[in-house]
Amino acid sequence: MKRFFLQVYSLIMGCLLAAMLAVDYFNNGFYASEVEDEYLKYAAMLTQAIRRDIERGSDEAESLAWWRRQLHENDEIELDVIPLEPGMAQAYVKTIVITEAEDRLDVIAPFDSTRALSFSVYDRAEPGALWAYYGGYVAIYAVLAALLYALTHRLYRHLDEIRRQAQRVADGDYSAALPAPRVAAFIELHDDLNRMTRALAEKTQENHVLTAAIHHELRTPLTRLRLALDMALTTPRPQEIPELLQDMDGALTELSQLMEDLLTLSRLRLAQTPPPREDVALDRLLAQCALRLDDARIQMNLVRCQVHANRPLLERAISNLLENACKYAHQHIAVTLTRLGDDIELEISDDGPGIPEEARVWVRQPFFRVDKHRNRRTGGVGLGLAIADLALKDSGAQWTIGTSAWGGASFRLRWRRAQEGIVQPFPGQ
Image (cartoon, rainbow, N blue to C red; front, side, top):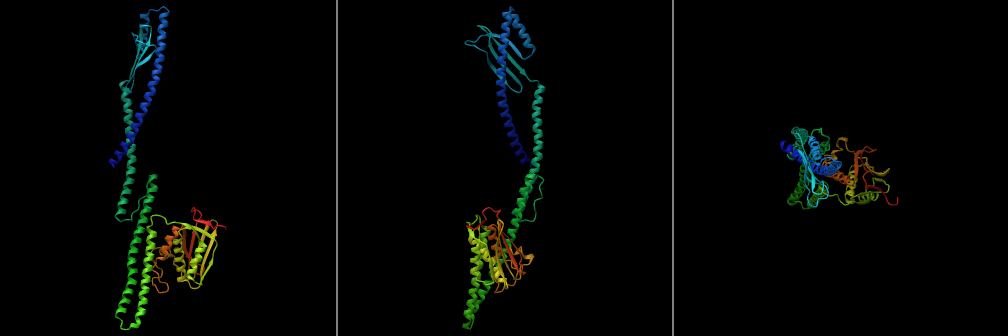
């Protein structure tokens, strides 16, 4: 704290002192120029006055003595007669010194053909005035030091809280949040740090879940593969080998799909730069995805529109949502693409068992399945909606999970016009 205060105080006071010295330097230069002009005029007027007195018949010595007395009473100017310098034609300032303690000025003005008048101005500040002058500076610096100490104390307290929070996060403790700051300048910083802490906590939890789930999901097909291989090697009935090979092929297919999904999920979560985007005809993409599934239960109601997104990711997300509907639907799957003002809305709904409200947040997480008992019809390892969530966010879509008119699941996607360049009408529409 003391070191921080001294650094801030030295920096600010150093800048203030440099600024004051610069101002004094320019002020003194301006003041010296003004004083020179003033006393040059004063010397010319005084010389003319003395000459006028002499021309009117006054004794030169008495006139000079009288003017000396008058000037000496003011305690400002001393008058002397000196020899005229060779080539001197007009008055000039011989010496000028301007400081806080004293002002000194020597002006030489020609008096006649052989002599010149020397005006010496010497003004020294009273000792009490100097003490008051420098004491004022000391008081100003003391008051500024007190204010800066109070300010740096508050700033250091918040910075220390941020430092301790960073240490806790580095140690893996995401439980504590920074308290609301009293300094308005730190509100956004504290909010960002708390948001970062929550995001790290969520990512860390996801990584723990993902690590544990990968081990489980890999073990299941590997166990099936090992079991089928052992049975194929030891079975006394050769006619059973083709069926065992088919089981092995199914396990390998499941492993391959799992690896592909994990790679896709990792790329989406760890991407440092956004993938390339293009204008994608959303209605055509939906039609192509439905055509590949070749499911008669899918009924489509589409309008022509396009979104600016990465086509492979958007296609993967929509395919996952449609495949999810095909797995669980009984008789009806409805795909509706509409335009609501400047927004685009896509709804995929089915008449399956639906997704419970308490599970609608968790289905976006990797390896979470509403149906804990996998079977050959539904299959899957719980990565489809997690991949769809990341891919849809990349395209600028906001999506929610609800209940369809048949009681099944309803996925509602919306691209908002507020996101510049995301939603556009189809060319020629």
